[in-house]
Structure formats: structure tokens, C-alpha cells
Image (cartoon, helix red, strand yellow):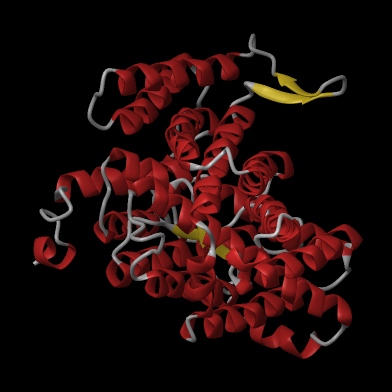
Length: 434
């Protein structure tokens, strides 16, 4: 039944391969279970409740993605947008976190309507192939930078803005060991190289004492009571111009973070057909479910995770990968102490290797065509420099229609790209004001 529903043989995969792909994706993004509660706690939210909300909505939305859209893409509350929620909306604007959740819920409704009427799908399909390749390559640079930064290989530097970190630190040495080990496994074409690299790096950390073993195996699942349904009660406080800005920002960032991730992942996995993603509407609906459900449970907006690329590289090709990832998120709620061994040093090697692989899409960009090359370059460079997928997309989408217009090729640009360029100009201005 599983074989037929997901067409495993037709996609040249198996239940075993899909399981290890789902496991690899889960291990690569499990950090969000701990990072998200810490970020939202700054806004006054209960850590335990946010932990449970994060795991539950990741499981629900990811399984929906697998069963309905049949893609190996995972969904969970996004980094960056959770910081905007906590530090800009709650602490910066001085609103209650319940009201901020209500803003997420309202933007989620708009998100869902855009998906139902296939407006999101139309927008994604209007993006030129070269820019889609740029998005994939930019995400590759971004996640590699994330891995190197989180692993201590690179760090902030007052003189040069950024430079190498302290490589004499044992934790940084563990990251470097993991990167070289995973590179070697991949170069030798060892099946499941990324996952094996993750496991062996974790074992090395445990053996050397750099990673502390869990104190227990099973723990009680924290209650959702402190956050569940608070978004509904917070709607009565919406109405100010600040909250309208917050709703629009949540909507735009979530929209293009997900769109960028889906395009990049699909481009990497070879799912795009004639520059379009088959069943894009169903994939986008999974994200809409995540955003609405997450707001009700008590967490910031969800997005498609670029770490899904680790599972894709291990061989995941169908929605069964996502189903396994979602199930693991459910199980993690009870076995959360075991996830303590999945540190940033463990996941960094996987992110760097996947970054290398995703950069291959840069070869399909027409670098001899300056308007396309400039827009693609700014998209690619903007992601790691702004620490945001959506901000990188914004730069490219503003420059592309402008350069095409001034070079006398304006008719070659889809009208939607002009609209997006204008929207992103205002979006960037709003971000700077806030």
C-alpha cells in the first residue's frame, strides 16, 4: 500500500531509504525544538508550552506535506521570523505576546486564502528560471554559513566584520572534524554519508566529553495550556497601524521564506518541470496549515525548512520522507532529553555539505546576461549577508525588473515580477523604519 501510494519504485527509492532520509532531515532541524522556546521566552511565553507547540505543529504540517503533497519537505516554526515576533513586535512595539499571536493568526488566514485561490502558486511559477536557480544557490551559501557560524568556524570580527573563529576551541575542532569526516564519506560515495557523518560527529562529541549525555531518556510532555488558543483572545487588541505592519510583515516574510525554500529544494531535487513545481498548491497548503495551526497552538510562523535538503541528499524522493520526519517530531516530545546530543557542532557538517551541493545550481544561471546576472548575484549574496532568505529574494526581485526595464526588455518580464518589485521596495522601507 505504501509502495503504491508514494510510488517508491517509480521514484527510485525504498521504505528504508525514505526512513533514513526522514531521520536525517529530523536530526538536522531538531535544534528548532530548543531554539524556538528560548527565543519566544524573551517575549514572556512559557518555554515548555512553546516546546510542545513547536513539535506538534512541525509534525502536523510535515505529515500533511508528505501525505497530501507527497514531497520530502519538512515544515516547522522558522528562525528569524521568531526573532521578529519576540524582539520587534513584542519587545520593540510593546504589545502583548497574545496580540502578536493574533497577528500571526490573521496573517495565516490571509496566507490560506492566497493558497486556496492559487495566487501563491501563480507567483512562484512567474519567477524566472535563472532567479529560481539563484534562490537555490543562495540558500546553499546561507545554510553553509549557518553551519560554519554555529559551529564556531567563522565568527564576528571588529576589524573585518567577519573572520575565522577560534579554531583552538575544542567545540570548533569537533565541527571541523565533522566537516572533514562528512566530506570524506561523501567523496567516497558512501551511502547515507551525511547521516553517518552526523552520528559519528555526535559519538566523537560524547566520547571526548564535548557533548554531555542526557540525564534521562523519557520525560513528560510539557502542557500546552499557557499558549493554546491565546491567538483568538488576542484578536480584540488588533487594529493599530503598528499591528497592521506586523501582520503584513509576518505575511511577506513567511510567504517568501517558504516560496524560496520550496523553489530551492525542488530545484536541488529535480522536481521542477518546465520551471514549475507540480502540486505546488498542495505543498503551499501544508505551509498554510502550519501557520494557522501554529498560531492556535502557540508559536511563531512556520516555514519550509532548508534542512530538508539533507534528507533529499540522502535519497529522500517522496512524501514518505516527510511522514517519517513528522512521526519523529511526535516521538521527540516524549524523548526530548535524547535530543540534547544534537548540538550545532553535530548539525554543522551536514549544512556545509548540503551548501556545497546546492551551489551546483549556480551553473545554470546565464551570467552573460547582465540584468539576470546582477539580480541573481544580489539574491545569492543577500541571503547570507542579511541572514534572511526573504531579504535576499527582495534584493533580486527589486533589481531584476528595474534592469530589464531600463535595458529595453521590459516586455519580457511577467507583470507579477513588477508588482513584487514594488512590494519589496515598501517592505524593505518598513523593515528599516521598524
